[in-house]
Structure formats: C-alpha cells, structure tokens
Image 1 (cartoon, rainbow, N blue to C red):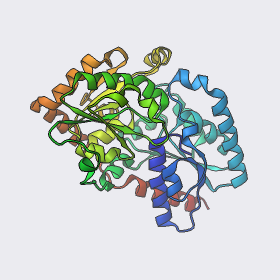
Image 2: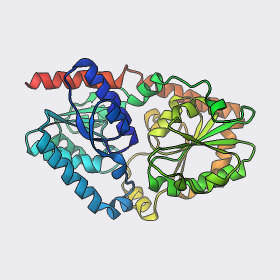
Image 3: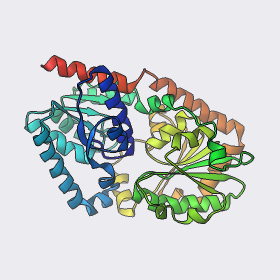
Length: 367
C-alpha cells in the first residue's frame, strides 16, 4: 500500500528486490505505475488518494473513507501472508490496525514522520506493526525511546539516484540552451502543492530572464495546473525525466519533500520552498517538533539549504537565494560539502535489497 509517487517508486524497487530473491512472490495492492510495472496487481492508483495538508485532507474525508473500506475488503478477499505499508501515515495506520485485528502480519517500510509531530503515535505504530523498516539513521534511535527495535535499511532515494543512467542527449532533445544556467523547478506531484507553488515559481522565472528554467511535470496532472509558467519564454517542461533534469541542472527550486533529498544527491544546489493553506500552516506550526522541514537539513542535523516557508516563500527572497547559489562559489561549495556529508551518512548498501532480505527472513522465521 503506497499513496504517493515516492512511495510508489520505492515500492516498485522493493517488489523487484523481493522477486529477485523469491520467484513465487505475488503482490496485489494500492500504488502506482512503478509498482504495477514491477509486477504488482494494481487495485487503486495513488492519484485517487493524493491529498496533502490538514485542511485538504478534511475536505476529502469521504473519498479517503471509501478507499480505506475498499482496501480492507480487498485484504480480506486476497488473504495475504503479509501487508506491506509504505509511508502514507493517515491511511496506512488504519490499515495496519485492521490487518493486525484480523491476524495478518504487518510490515511497514519507510516510517511515518512521527518524530516530527505527535510523537506518541509511535506507541500506536508499535502496537499494530510486526516489523518496521526505517530509512533515516536517526529514526532507529528515536524508536528506542519507545522500547522498540526497528531495522535501519539505508535510504532508497540514494539507491534510485545511483541506478540512474543519464540521458546524454537530454539537453538537445528538450531544446535547452547550454549557454545559460539551467534551473530545475520541482513543484511537487499533488494538485494542492502546484496551486500554492506554481505562482511563486512563475514570478521567479519572470524576474530572472537570464536563466533558463525547466519544470519537472508529472504524468497524472494536466498541464493546466502549471498555470502562468506555460506562457513564459524561458520555461521548458520536462515530463517523466526528473532525474535527467537534475543531472544537467546547475540549481533548483524545490517544494519540500523527498525531492529535496533527490536534488541533494544529484549535487544540485537548491532553495527549498513550501506553502500551504493558512489553516494547515497554523495547525502544523503548533505541532511540528523538529527544527527543519527538508530531509536535507534533518539528516545533516544543521542548515545545509535555505528553507523558505509561507511568507518567506516569495519571489524576491527566493530569487536572492537562487542568485547566491549560482554566482557565489564559496556559498555554493559550502552547500555541496553538506551534500557530501549526507551521502556518506546514507550510504549503507541497497535499501531495497536490505529490506527484501529482512522481510523474507522474518516471514520464514514465523512459519
């Protein structure tokens, strides 16, 4: 069960790893194209579940409730040996409790960010999960506070970056000039994210005509969601090739999320931006228990990249930071040094292979 693009990507790689170790593995569930292509029987695509922010989730509770009911029924019908849940806490916590009540083993890959807010949710996770596989080094220590031993398996984002084969014809194919700095725009994969971030990115592009910008779009969203960007002369649109874009970019403006870590692992200096509805922001501000929102800074334990949130996510401040990382070599090198530290922390072999091996071991040990 995965409810967004990054979970689908890592779920797909996990399925490949599982199948490479046990040929008779069969998978069915909720996810996306990556998991389907890896051999999973796809019941519901995550595009039907991609809601973000407290207010947005509240507005779509009836849709989420229907999908939870459908997922529960499908589990009872399919009778799996184990339910594997990937991130997507609000939905998957309910599925974990249901599976546990029905005597079905539960594995969770990529822990919910319970360390960020409402940390006592760790107690509920522990009660309903047989094994937890975490991808951030500090999570293992965090769960120890709850007398819970979890498995740190490495980070699947680093796996995906390492596996990427760069398209050397990318710039030519996409008619991107090589005489101007290329700035990658990664606005996110959810409609709500785009509605908040695209106007900002359009303003930054207008204010910096000497740079060329390329937007990483996602297949499941219409081009209309990219608004004002569509009419600007220094904008290109890149569909389904985010890693190739990052491979060639000199800088990036990135919506907070997994993409911040992907950008860092491609050694692209970045500005992290985040906007949400006023209600969601006020709620989050009072709940968040960590000093940063980007994975880059959280893993490093210090500020490696600038985080521009809500009012600070404006075209003037973002443009100033963008010009700094493109034109100040000392500042740029400082960020790249931080990236190197992060890579060294995360590099513990293949997360997908490590997780698949442990999952099969735990399943065999329980039989």
